[in-house]
Image 1 (cartoon, one colour):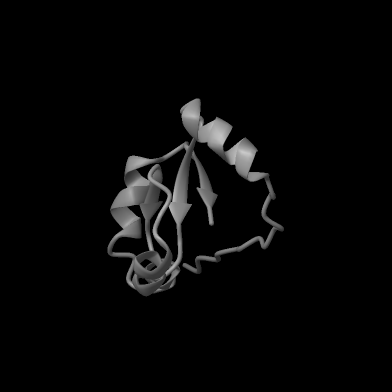
Image 2: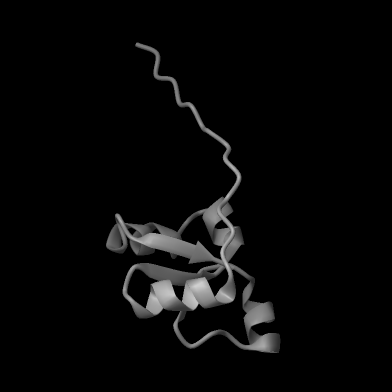
Length: 79
């Protein structure tokens, strides 16, 4: 038996900071800061954002896996 996986590459939707804030405040979306820990330390993090490094998403997904399970069906706004 052969299993095929098809990945579609789509251009992500772009929204304004105001639109992001409104969606998060309304409970329609979750904000995710995908920068690396050193960047969070250097510049700070938006108080409503979850910190999940892009390197973890591309790698072992130790933090991303449980986060995605807990937020199924919720819009994720990544920055």
